[in-house]
Image (cartoon, rainbow, N blue to C red; front, side, top):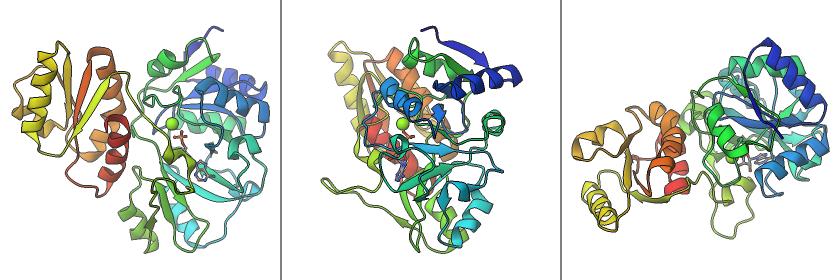
Length: 329
Ligand code: AMP
Ligand code: MG
């Protein structure tokens, strides 16, 4: 199959719509990462997403809808606080998990009774969703376990020959996947950390819990138990500020004939005399937005990426640390 990359515009949106209605999968930009989408009511199209990615069949997909879509067509909204969250954080990088009404097919929900929904803010993605006017289910548009794509070229590198079309909507601004929030109980619960933080949710609805997953637990969000986001080279993760440890790992790698790169926040640039740096930026938002781009740049250059942890797990750092542990830990 020939994989075309087309700049997202009116014509490519119409082409994407035609392919999607015909049961094909199409890669699309969002403000978090690129998604591999299919119409959520077409079981065989949704199966194709799992085939193309090699995604475990028990890991459900998020349904994406436009901002004027009536969510009550798809799910039960059981608690009033949910309306406040929708008002404050959508469109944007917040996914809400509801009781499903079963409209989106069981291939997407993996037979579960809940459905995760997101309203992306990416303008081009909104335009496509509006045009299709149906839920598009989409996981990240990478091969399973690999680092999530934040440019059309990243998608092409993983899925060339496997899908007909990639809509190019530029580099994703958010850079890490959405916060996944379970809103089926009286108190909302974060299943996956992201750019909408616990603190932000609490400021709107008072309380917010974090789901803790231990080894062997039956998890509520199956995706969190899988290996994820890994670049195709060796990795190591060091504590915040452990310059000595990083230097020693770097020197050790060089002495073994390997090419190491250090991936860190800009604040550490002055601590190293090496050229091989992958600088992530200054603020947590900037660091999140560059993380996958730098991991994918790094895997092309390095035999070993040596990453430095964030100073804490507050705010956006919680989402960054979740991705850093899975990609480099
Ligand atoms: P991905 O699209 O690959 O970034 O992953 C979507 C994330 O949302 C995974 O962690 C899934 O397990 C989670 N998810 C999707 N649907 C549900 C659901 N119905 N209930 C709980 N978690 C979900
Ligand atoms: Mg993914």
